[in-house]
Length: 270
Image (cartoon, rainbow, N blue to C red; front, top):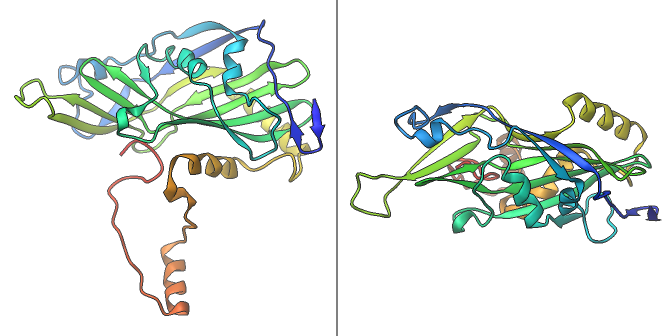
């Protein structure tokens, strides 16, 4: 239901049932081979807690705003609903990041038509693995709603691909010092919850983009940047390339200060 040309309210029929599929692929790589069995069995044997699970659709209301919103608006995701879904991947998710990361659960209205709504979101969490912790770089995804039916047309919550997309830490049992933690990074090809198929996502996104305008859609990249800015001050900087910085330095007769950073600025896998 449109309240103004640029604001909409969102709802999901909570009485419907939704089947969610879960996936965790075997870990392919860690820098120090801690994923190899007998090094750290809990990491080596990390698998999805429930490959498929039925939910009341009301759980997805956690991803909806309480008020009418416009394209590009952001809001916080309700923690209880997010945790219920994350437990399908692993029984012990934590959202507070233990003070070592940048916690948060944020969603953004990316696009809408009379038929569909595309909500893009980002969640930071970690999972307790016995004596250690598994910290994904982030969970990102889409919630696409059929507006007339108030049903979930597609849902995807996943860890993005990348050469490094998680961090792990565990306590060295041989150490006398309880504060001695071993840290490592690695790559997992798939950690995901999904409703529907990638073909459904592509079809709906194509239909959204064919009929939306500047007032009813922003790009995926714009939505991701809006979400990133909720987590990291560094994302609010207007970054330029090294070549562009050299041109600006010459034009403005100013020096360039270079900082070397060992790890990404915009995720938790560092």
